Image 1 (cartoon, helix red, strand yellow):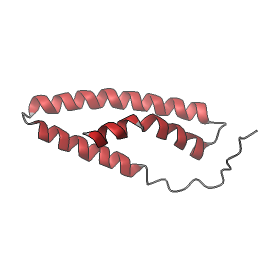
Image 2: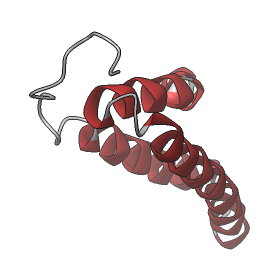
Image 3: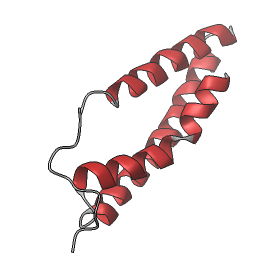
Image 4: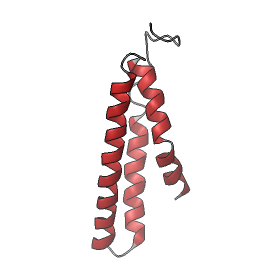
Length: 93
């Protein structure tokens, strides 16, 4: 339960870091807007799906296992892009 809460609490910070790192500062606002919209829609959909799972299955354990799988897959997806190449740490003019 703690790990799920920590991973969901850090999603905004991670999205901002990845948006600036992979897309540069010139595109930051557009990419961050899409990321925040996606996170909001996903949170709403995830809550509805979790409520449906709890309604259909009595044990809370199944819902937690399903949440664990989805959050683990989401965490693994962050490893896929690799390193950002060709980006400097200086602010683009």
